[in-house]
Image 1 (cartoon, rainbow over the protein chains, first blue to last red):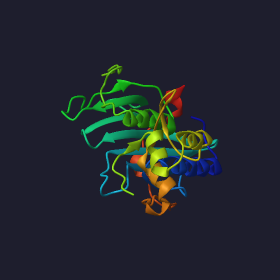
Image 2: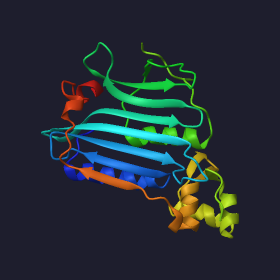
Image 3: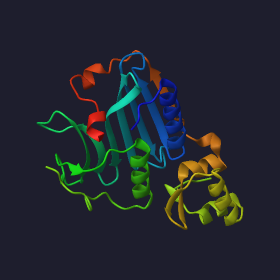
Length: 154
Length: 87
C-alpha cells in the first residue's frame, strides 16, 4: 500500500466510515495523528441496532501507520471478523510472527471449538476494504467461518 | 414497522416500502440503497439500510473519535515497517 499524505489519510478514514456505516453501527478512532505513529481502529457491529436484533458479527479493523518522508506508511494491521453467533474468528494480519523480526502478512482462522488457535495461514498483503468485502460477503451469505482453502505456514 | 431480520431480499424491501421490486433494484444500482451482492443476480440488503430507507430516525448512531495526541509508539516500537515485507 502506498504512503498517504495527511489529507489522503483523513479522506480514506472518512470514506471508510461512510462505507461501513451503511452495514452497521461503526465506531472509528483515529489516534496519534500529531505523533510519528498513528493508529486507526474501526469497530463495526452488525446489525448494530440493538433490541430486538442482537449483534451477529463484529468486524474489528486496526491499522498502525508511521510517518515517513513519503507520507503515512501502513506498517501493521489486524483485520478481524468475529462471528458472535457461532463463536468463530477469521482475520488477515500483518505483523511479525513468533521468533521473527519481519512483519509477515498472514491469515488466521479460529473455530468455536478452538481449532486453529495459534495457527497462521498464507495470505497476501491487502487493504482494509478488500478484507472487509470478503468478510461481508461471507456473513451475508450465511456461510460459517472455516479454514477451507487456507494453507498453513507454521 | 418491525424489523426482525439481519438481511432482506429486494422483493421483501419492495413489499415493505409498497413499491415495485424494480424500484428497489434501481435504488441499489444508483447507490441510493446499500446491498451486498452475493452473485450476479442476488442481493441482500442489510437491515440498517432498510431502516435508513424506511425509518431513518430509528437508526442507531455511529461515531468517530479523533485523538491527535494519543501515544501509539509503544505499541509498535522496534517493529520493522511493512514496506520491506511487501516488496
